[in-house]
Image (cartoon, rainbow, N blue to C red):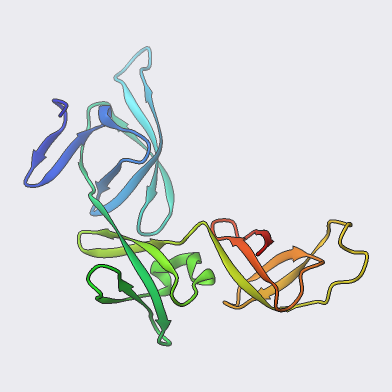
Length: 197
């Protein structure tokens, strides 16, 4: 362990000298992941670190500057695999794949991921201090087209696209040759059509 890193009551304290992309720190009771950082040593004055931090709970990215050597508590994030069971009208019910405990999550905790949720889908839940902050969906999901304009002969080569409603209710742009009943793969990060399944 580096001399800047010490263990305080089970928590690690890290200094700006230990910053790396992907490291998580606690600021004002919230967990942040370091997205980008730059050590700056100006000609005059003391050195500092310019950072981009992503709030694990809200997903918001903010830019912050810290003095060199400033210390933070390392935010210990736990990842657990869970399976999506059903929506009860208010909450989305997940089951912890190890303990079989059922955990209700709100639409706010799920963010945009709620658009791609299918029953029996496995996700990775992010826990911080015993609370679920959010979930990571698979990068791509396979969903059925339930509504779209019928394809027109000869339109397959033109490279255009049309809106299609998928089984979860999300609307994505798809090529003209996609029809109702087709199963397609969608990127859950961008919402883009990938290919016909």
